[in-house]
Amino acid sequence: VNLDDPVSKHWPEFGQEGKGNITVSQLLSHEAGLANAMPDLKRKGLAPLLDFEKMVDFVAKAPAQGAGTFNYHAISYCWLVGGLVKGATGRNMAEFIEKEFLEPA
Image (cartoon, rainbow, N blue to C red):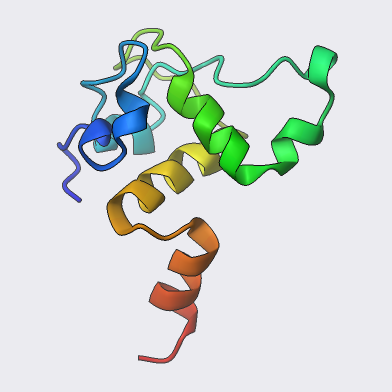
């Protein structure tokens, strides 16, 4: 994965809603313009936040709101990175961390 690659090169679903040109670098530096990539918690409660795959799908469908503009993704960041990791490696975050960091070489 190259930092200048569009995220959608590795995670095609992310390219929806005007996000096709957002780069890996922009995603990782909180400059993807996704300030509101969160479900309506007042209506749905906290349950959606506990379903990692559902949230990865949710952030993939979130509309772009000005790529290149800094917006801190404190909560949604893990789903954004998780979607990128799964798209690039075919493994979910737990599998990726286990294989790449926790298992002996």
